[in-house]
View (cartoon, rainbow, N blue to C red):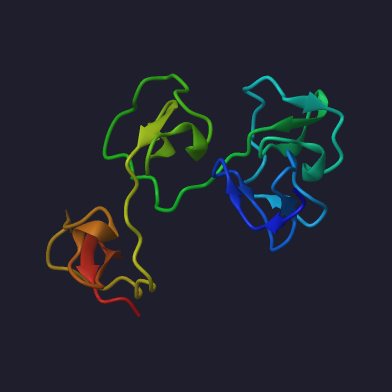
Length: 166
């Protein structure tokens, strides 16, 4: 069958209109694989010696590492922001390398020593105004998700508080 379709394959491969046939196992010439190359090679490559994503199958990307160009699953940056560390450090172990290594909406965030999967903070649109004086030094919020409506968690002269974005 040579019918052309636009599709999402294994959440990794985004095809542009007419670039993948129902019998193809790899992206066509106009297809690009969604995501980016991982920072570190942590998996066994599906194939070696690629020149572009179209040389890779199974939604993999052609990425260059010390060993040369290889086909690997792409990494993804999920929406949201890693939380600020309130105090201390976490375990000095690498439980993840990219957001792609984490389940659901969790992101790969620094724990002060290593990296672990963590629920992200919500970032609302808009920007914070320049800090203004506050009567008390306090952390009234840590991220936008803790503020009502469209308000953002913005820095004050001595902490953070919810305020209207500019």
